[in-house]
Amino acid sequence: MPTTEATTTTTTTTTTTTTATSNAASATATRAVFWDFGGVILSSPFDAFNRYEAEHELPIDFIRSVNARNPDTNAWALIERHEVDAATFDHLFAAESEAIGHRVQGRDVLAMLSGGVRPEMVTALDRVIGAGYVTACLTNNVRSTGDGPARPEIDAVMERFDHVVESSKVGHRKPEPRFYEIACELAGVEPVECVFLDDLGINLRPARAMGMTTIKVLDAGQAITDLEAALGISLR
Image 1 (tube, rainbow, N blue to C red):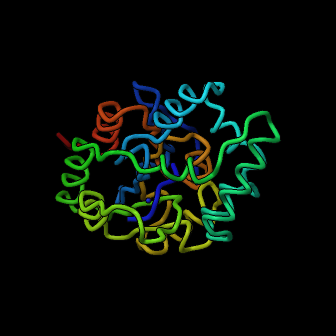
Image 2: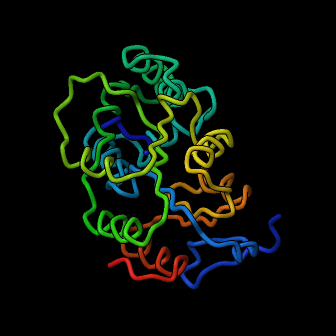
């Protein structure tokens, strides 16, 4: 999920919740846990999108539908790779949304990206760190202009991670395979040694194909339960 800056396979097995998927190669010991930021550590901006749509009489999930068109080259992709600035994104997104029926300014969308911290997920992160796992935040984000309000609670979470991989800094974004390769290189692990949590299936598929155990985050409670099952430790 995008945020503003302050993150040999064989058969596939599925946990009882059907949201955590791992390769049979998971006999390899897990050494690292990778976390998306928006929609995992933070509440999802999709809720804010839906409120905006209701207030402006737009179809539900219209903003997400704009993002889904030409996903490698659209305004979202460009700003998350820091190939355009916020002003250019504002105009590009407005044009893309208008082309499919409703004009939405990109600046309005950027203002909705930062959700609130989920304290139970931070507790789980702390327990993972305490158990000795390498941690990394893997986030598609927009480079900060520095003129937004301070978010010390977000800074405090980001400082916990061993590594932070930001699309706006590395020039690649999820679901591009190179993004996950960079994360593994920084963490000093192989994909089969990683568990990765994200709220978007499109971001999980390439990670799973590389050998990672993946958990699709629907809500905090479910995600923690699935991660506990994957690691075999209590996270509450």
